[in-house]
Image (cartoon, rainbow, N blue to C red; front, top):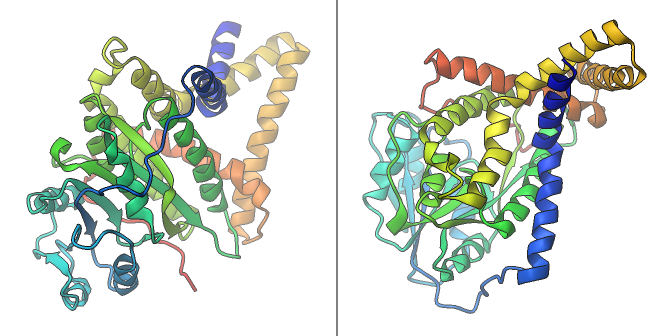
Length: 391
């Protein structure tokens, strides 16, 4: 029982903190022997690039997105803009059609984002393709900062940074911003050690020649597209200076909906990327993949519950002070999480309590996502979470 308890506790710690510590140490060791990885400059002959934006019923924000897109810097004659609005039933296609410099693809049939992306890719002939969401806004030099990395022939994909904008009335979604800051740090170290483990759909890019179509029922299309490139032996780079900004989820219920979908997609991805479990083919990538993704999406939430239950049983049976202290710490953490839930219901803002609450919600979402995937009830068609108003 004690072995199972310590094993569970170790995996939970390693998943959320230990891997970051190990990763930091490995990066420091690599710098000692090989130095920091060089970053290509901006004084180069940039590749041709197509910016692809899939938009579904985004009339409230699409014109602001278009203005942001037209302000992006890139060498003249090397950038194409493509918006695809399949299934949109509002004025989104009509608003985009007003801009002659933008290529619009539209069909009234909604078959899911990935089907729309595949259809768009048949029209793309540039060397690099950048994908971004309709409800995110890029910094002016984002495309330049991303495209410069393709000067390295070992690079197959480049992911930008997702930045979550918080409003003044902080609620439990404040934990979302904290989570993404921590994730950004891990991605920087992952990228320097070898490769980022998947790209986020808010802003990522691929070499057109390496793009492979994923199955039409794919839930996490951005993750799968990037990891299929990694499976071909190419690195995925993280470029934190190229970022996509978006507002946090409207409330924790909306964030939970998004997280459950991601968790269901995570299980699906793990089952379809079985080659990445072979350390003889991908030694460093396999280590990063299991440590950063697989543990979070599979066993760790279950081991959190197991560690708590075993801790209670051990304390009841032995009363040993060490296990009592650990149990006290666990109960305190979950009490703070419960307090965060209560405060959100009462609209009282104490950010420090929203972080443990968000952490628990995130792990509950994994359990719910696994259940939903096994039940076959998770659709590949995106049901987007509501975001806060910019006002």
